Length: 127
Image 1 (cartoon, one colour):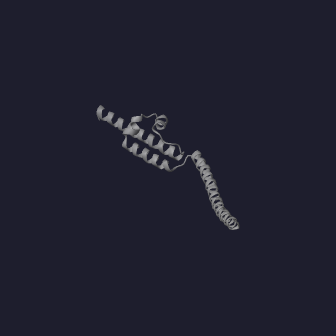
Image 2 (cartoon, one colour):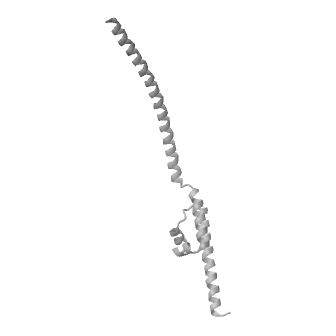
């Protein structure tokens, strides 16, 4: 084996190690429910930004993990969602109560207007 072949073999070995390191880091981040970003991956692995974007295997794995994480909910977001849902429920109850009250007031207003018309008619008859 000549030097060129050894050099190619060494480069391929290093490339495989980098891919394994990146794959393991992505799997660990998914398992720990950490948000996957290229800067975080760069920091954890020491690999370049270009590696994550140019390597198709890693890029596909990273995109798949990011898509999976899109469905995962941040705990703070969950708390905010619960609070907002409670607020919406309370507001809906308030709207329903005000709608009922509005209907009752309309009926009362109609009765009072009818009574006023009767009173006006009686007043006119008495003149």
